[in-house]
Image 1 (cartoon, rainbow, N blue to C red):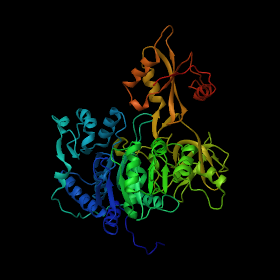
Image 2: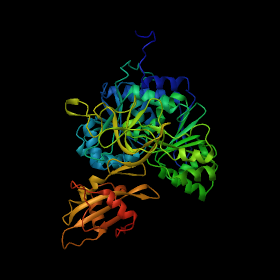
Image 3: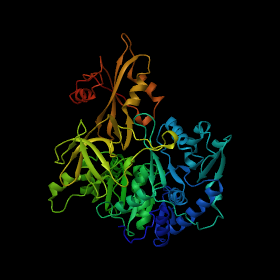
Image 4: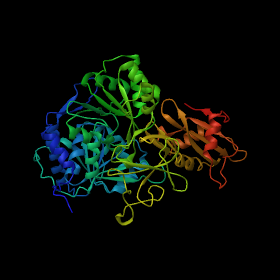
Length: 550
């Protein structure tokens, strides 16, 4: 027997319409630097401009289901694209500007992007890639920038403001199936090519409700939200959609992500909730300790992307009165997987123990731990296994297999459809997750992933290197950094600086290891695989002769 309830699809257009009418006076404030006033735009204006953008994109030939790329900072125009592109039935495809050039090229071509919206300040990043992006037909430039770098480009170049000017200020948003794709994010290719995660309208809508719940960020129209986490990184943790739904104003930092401008914008605009990876908040804490400012407006700082040092949490709370909340997630989980609010009725000492965990699973996210043989392990707070999750905003496959079929690699999805996260940890009976290791040796540095396999493959392409193994080691600033160990050809001598320079020609600079060791042989398991746990132990116990490069 079916219910008698109306079947109304959960769509981004409903978030857009609600936010721009019921909460039309809320604002998106884009920081412009210390020399000028922040740029303010009401939710009502954002809604109008999102409609104008949709008309403009339709004029350029964008059809339902087609991806439209953005290469942009966190700003009001990106917010207009966030809402307008999916509402018209197209797919918002955010490009991670921190990825290596070859991965960006692969991603744009794989998604078959025809149009890219790009901030003018990022044109020097986009321009050299264009010869390798034959499908790009239109480049829409947002804001000031040196457009001369686009001279000779095959694609047509448009100015964002000129493109939307004079377009109708409303749009008849289509009533599409809520399971249709709304946004596309790619993983950073920790093994092999990057993988696309295709979020649905339904998943983003439900995720926004969860973000706004009391057990998560509890956003209301009285809040001002500061998403320092980039809008190209897992939808800025869902904050743009959730804030527009709740009427919580947004403070967008644009490209001003350094500690001093962040401190200035917090003091000036007075946000109540902020979100970023630990390295951002570590820099801000040092800035506030050195140059105190009035930041009492912040009631909550959310930290995710990598484990938050307890000293950082205590530093904010004890010296500046700001409460830090730990969270866990990944691209495949939209990303809210857990959030660490302690349970009711616990004392202060016990509370800190809970807050140091990755947090508790919300009602819509089911979790289980599996052992080496696939057996399910108990949630007793002691049994460690690989974390698997499922839920309405958890990926069930990757985008872009042969003939458009979803990709479900066995190492990422269980036979019964659960997402294999690649993280190893424990879960308490009352649902708190503590991550203890990773099933694969991926390095999480400052909230970004570094593939140890990719670094190893590049190093072993050097003519003097026989073997190379890269492992994660602790780092006070970044959480983890790579340690590169190499085995040289017999009789070969080469400086670590030269190997680092060789590697630097093939990967992004921020991924380059600072720690290097030349070893006689890489330890191996009984089946001949690199035994990285031995290398980590040798490093921890000081058995390796490590060279530290600046």
